[in-house]
Length: 381
Image (cartoon, rainbow, N blue to C red):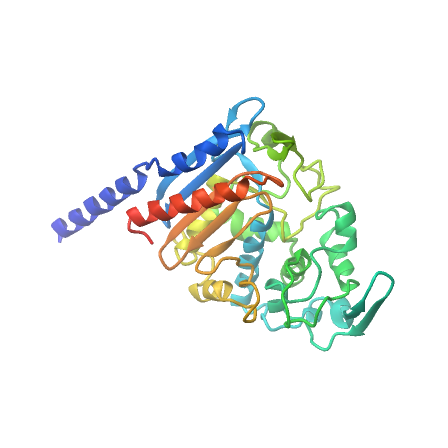
């Protein structure tokens, strides 16, 4: 028995050493975009549920001052926030506090009289009462019928309204179709789901996320309000292409100053700031079937429900805040791609901060080819 145990330990150590062996494929794939001045900086993290395969950092967090990009630097993860909100809500489903089939009006009575657009032109909008009561499932899968944002969010910023006011604005926003009959990617639906977390738990959205997800996972640099110190010393600048050259720009959709709790409010569809190091912990938890450091966060059954295609045949693939078939995760507006595969126990993270850059699609394609090859060579997918 001792020999068998010793052999198992040696095999585990050998496997860990194999995982940490660097492959040049990723840097060879991404470095040309930096050398040509097409992108500022990118981080790739490939891992298993309990070990790091490799971390590749290419380029700069601050291009002007040549500050190298690093895994402890902060980015706005944008819509990757959605998979955090979906995970949190599914925790409450498991606890019997919420049902995916509950009508939204159970939590927000002001949603009882939603209207659907039946006709619209430049001068006229004809509304009729919705025949279908929208459910929690509709909200999480972008089948509720809301537009991307409310008019107030469009005008002042996605994070400009307290969550309760945002939901009130949503209740006055016409639906573009009967709930459950079509697909329209919408921040409002996910924000309504975040509001349900507050109603059911009696906690603020940000407090629930901190208590149930961020703190237990040790995500010490994850926040909705990055401090001035973090922005000064651990920050990945956002860049866009202007006249063929990279130019520093503001983060889209968010209002500054980013650390202000007086002018910025939780927006569960896109409000979280985090680092590659912290994101790895969240996605390793999902890669391990919902467990991290011996603590269960979510069941495998809930993960399967999140990953299952909710939209109808012929409509874009979308689960419950999940956006890629065969993986559990979600991309973000500034280019980050964060996913786990509970079936094989692997994680892939791509961290960057770009806005409206025509070269970024090619970089993502090169990254995908590289990680496919690396996972294949390691026998992981």
